[in-house]
Image (cartoon, rainbow, N blue to C red; front, side, top):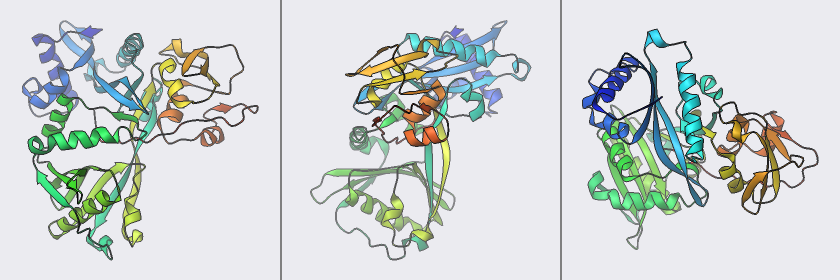
Length: 378
């Protein structure tokens, strides 16, 4: 059931989350936890005024190409040991997904503790990270960018410039990238203790990129690297290179589409891996499908156990999506469609891997593909 934001509930939720996630301090006194908690919807099962199972639902917005849509972040999924295995989380997820559909939320996203567990609710891995480990030798032959300037400072000083640059990035065919509210920006700064910021300026004095980063022992962790052009990237890499006099390596968990290696003369000296990050689920296909299919198409959702309103054939035409009895051009579960639309998976790959059924009569089916720059965690 949905819980209220009263003092008793806050204390009970803080105790459960603290126990389940092995927190060593009182969360009902934790500014970082409460900053997220007070902006979220709360769902739980109780027993004699004690919250036994709990899920927090963040109210977010994300960019889908040129449109901003409602999104929901799922987090702090927790149960006391004696309340596990009785279907509580499944019951809460069913209630949450139906409430999100009723509120016209388009997408939901989460960081999974188990991909298989959340796949049963319609989620698919959609956000991957390209992980760079860069040591000093990797810069062998790299030419420093001497033009332009860099301003290093704290969040309060550089926030207006960083927010503006991030907002510009959202217009670049982003799919599922968070549209950050002011409270979320402030929380990010507090959440990552000891974070540094730097803004890149071109020769004309215009801000064209930024970095946020942290020192962790012998390693420098880059949290965000945003740049508008090749100059801003070269200047950012020159700035990072200068830190290798103090650190053994630079670690950057980048969006999958990042291509830093193209700027290194010796790419073989970089260590690059890939790992899954966030999962997504389409909540309302009527909102989402028209944004991805520019031409007329009929899509069949074969099954969606938690939002059965999505099941059926949908004709996308002229920016609208309506029920249809026409033969589908492609068909699949809500999980498969979520993966197709919100990840880098192509139609051909989805068909080859038998995630979706692409009808033989389909010709020249067009699907828009975007980029996802997901630096957030919840």
